[in-house]
Image (spheres, helix red, strand yellow):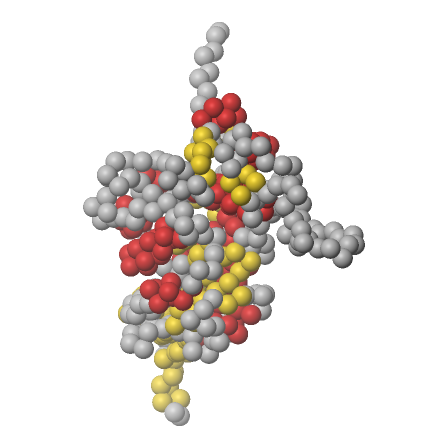
Length: 506
């Protein structure tokens, strides 16, 4: 018998007609895959999300139950889903440390003296206000909270209204307490990353109400670090194409950068990309990307930083939105340029082209702000800058490169595991019978050329003749059970720059 049967034995003498199924040729082309994302979610004690294993997030409505109302993790889940519902979403709880302190921001309300007077009553002196009614446009964590008040209000009364308005937004990672004319915002997390941004009248055309002034000041920063090593160990071998990080601290980027590189090795083959946002001034962001000395920042092809800058929107929301945006893209090689980051409020002073170019050279991606104030991707880059010898290397500059290489590797693995799951390996020229489960170097070569044609049709590769010329397949000289292959697909470029010299005549 020359045909390789799996279920019908040669020794069957009772007779009958038997048919077995072989699905090795059923799948044509490259199969579609689900993009799986993981959120490293800071979780409050009220949340039920596990920290010893990732959990599936079924819907946005699960955010508060999993991470706790007003948690950073809940905000990250909502921001991810606001950007896209396409990727499959998972989360793992990053619990607050037992030691640490909450950040505190003070909002001080004042009323101009010309609207205030003192009157003597039976109960003593009281302050009388002639302040006109108005609305205070307050922003906490990038969320607009309009605080309306009637005429004749004092600073203490307005502060009480501010505290109540903030309390009406339980989704914010802060609590509000009021004492006289001061509203104290306290973070719900004992983490250094939980910085509380509060501002007033930051929108176009907005201004403070007549006679009212507001001062927002960070009284104390939070203290407490996430144990990322424990979270990484808890993931096991489960594959995630994207990992969303709540902060861009040096320890965070080092731990997750090393883990993503490990996952991307040939034997693991479960590579993905970690996303984080950098904040502060241009200098602050450059220092994170390239390091304080300009040459000691993270150097990882599987780490992407987005510049939140001085935006009032927390960095974890920026990172979540970018990861969702990238994960929803069907074409791994197509630039994400012009795509909008939903829910991210632009800094009041967007970066100039020169400043964005500096960020790109410091391994930080760049975004632009359109005429309507929407934040849009300009160019997504990884933090990979140099090779093992310290030589400048642009191999993995663009995020789309590593995304495309992961796609090609998955296609190769799927093709050979689907079509040749239990095959024997023979030299070229071996006269085995038709129907035998045998693969040869020549058959493998033909399979790869066919696969290249599919990539070419999908707009991922080019230069077919060069690919066929350089493709080399052989049986390993020291191991007759191993097929070795060297293939060099030429990826398409991306149209990012158009340079035209207009040599005109009169």
